[in-house]
Length: 127
Image (tube, rainbow, N blue to C red; front, side, top):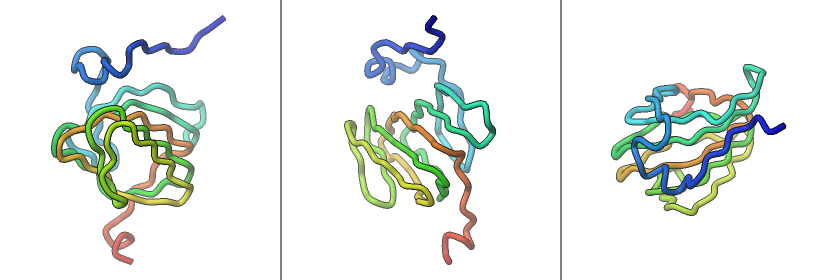
């Protein structure tokens, strides 16, 4: 018996504000951000996945990934320390990597976190 989620026509759905159950997302200093949680493991420190939508001007502060993070840009352009990543870009961030994210023009991406994100303080970022 299948008990998972099936999202059809995702590429068109991410472009429509009403097509998916978006909710505001402010974790880790995010602004102008919405999320659709796809799954979260039973452990507090376990894996999770989501569709994330950055409105124009959205940003998140620098954060650390203790586990792998996969980001697949579906629409728009996502920026991080490594540059600008247009739709179709897949980024695989290894454990213990850190970055800040933003989008001047807005974007939507699929993200899979192996472990929860940890915020990096200003002092840690400058060290």
